[in-house]
Amino acid sequence: MTLLRRLLAQPYALALILLILGLVVTALFQPAFFTPRTFANNLRTYLPLILLAVGQTVVVLGGGIDLSLGAILTLSSVVMVQAFGMEADPGPLRTFGGVALGLLVGTLAGAVNGFCVAYLRLQPIIATFATSFIWGGLALWVLPQPGGNVPTVLQDFVRAYFLMPFSLWAVLAILLAWAWFLGTRWARALYAVGGNPQAAFTSGLSVERTRLGAYAAAGLLTGLGAFFLTADIATGDPLIGGPLTLASVVAVVIGGTRLSGGAGGIVGSILGAVAYYLLKNVVALSVFNFNLSPQWQTLIDGTVIVLALAAPGLLRLVRRQP
Image (cartoon, one colour):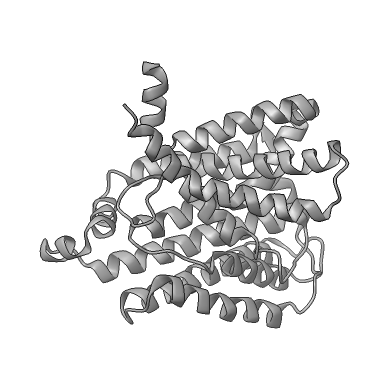
């Protein structure tokens, strides 16, 4: 019982519980999921959402939220694809230039969101919901329909395997970067601004610059997510990032980061992103194994998301029990 209480006391307890539950159910219905090749393929699929969830966490820690991350990912992706051109091997200058341009677009889009929130004093949920239409519209203008080409070298890069899948190396790199970030002055400012912006201001911290930086960092991380997603599917799609916005918020919430800001971290968000995909997989397996109509999947998906968002409140109630 003491061990259970310690587990429930962790901010990422819910994400860990859902992750374990998803793994158990998946092992029962889909044992092949755990073969090295399938594991590597699935982790590569999870990586874009993991990066979006990490970016969303940074924004939320600073007291904001970004409902345009999916649209930013789409815009970054189609910009990369258009920059690559139609050649299978466009050369290193065009290849790396396209990646850099996509990352720059993501960072600038995030910075625009941050400027609207930090300096124009717009409500984060309203401002980023509005800009999501701008970024989505620009994506459709850049690439009106699915298509395009991704250099083979980038496809091979994201599928590389050295001791373990490249995607797992990427997750470890994110965790190491976060461990370094927590020791910086900006990290302390971010938590302070998210926890109590008025107190942070009176102590001499720049609330505006901190929030602007948080949104720009989220845009950069989203651009990285766009790179991995684009290299994985090897083409462009002007609507591909839409579902990932809500998924990133769900991952952050079940990962234990407080939506009011100032408390949480990316470990729970990473676990939450993986748990989200596993739950989606469990729903798909349930629909298949119980011969349900495919129309039920949307209803079940929505119910799972609502329960996941409500679960942190229920978990707090459990923690208060004597």
